[in-house]
Length: 457
Image 1 (cartoon, one colour):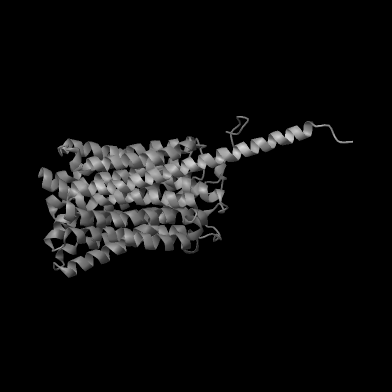
Image 2: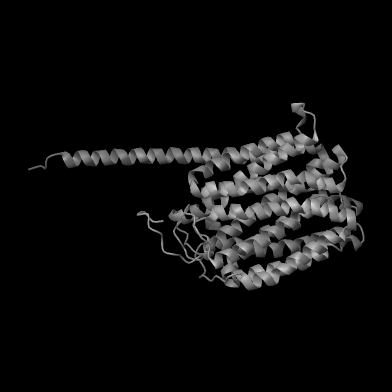
């Protein structure tokens, strides 16, 4: 609706609307927008299924093949390292390669490599097994990054006025992948062995390829003038990148450590270990659309979400063990409850980051179009992968040296630091705006007084 209450003229889904229109929710979806949603949902679901399916059983299998906890953490972490490297490349050259081609090709390669991961149990144990794990994991990371970077750019292009709402809603499918991955992976592993989870998942991803070839629209744009370096050197963007690092590191920390801790502490079978991950993933999937809607409808709430989401996450990791100096007995119900709260706080912190970076880029002169969207999408993926690379490696190392309880508490300090840093930045920003407003008000008053004085004769 416009200011007079009349319906707005229909806009092209791929049009470049100004950022000040953010928060207006369309009452309808075009066919093109619906197809974009289906495509984005398919890659969100597929990538998160692959990401989470390893948790309940792969650490145990890798230990049988001679991998230490630190090496297992590095296997998990190398995925994020290659996401970091490839997302910067794909973000910069997406306009040259073509968003649709990058999406479809990435999904095709990801499906094939996922199937290959399922035959690694046939590889001899020791250095050969470890090397093959790194190689196949890296190939999967590069292919999924191509698809996800293209997906985020296309999605933001199709819904320029409701970025957070749409991204938050699609996080339901990411959460669904996180929810279904561990229990399905654990069940298939327990029932049919190591190969079956990866073969089934790889085939599902491959089946999505022809569907997306048919329905995904093809957006074109001219290359932009700006670079990743100019974007990341903006102070606000740099701090938000630190927040993304902290959150992804905290979540990545759980991959090589939580299943081992639960198996050791509570003696649960592999199939039930996957259910422990359910609390985190399900609460994240349910809360993300709500935080996305609130971020678009009330943009001023984003800063509160970023700050308090990080602080709550820090508290969750202190209670995850819990840390020994609290003298709280570790119980399964408490662990699941903390994971549920952590899922909500993660959604609170993650969802506002993309629209905040995008609005900051527009405010600092970045052109509105697919090139800027690709830069922001690539930057988000790169910064997420930095934390997701460090989290599993640091988690595996600390778990081996000082145990899960202290390791989780140390990990929580990262979220605490980022939350406090973001809060301090917003306080300084508010102070500067208030000072500037007072100066402008005083200047306006002086001008009024000058205007009221009689003209000199």
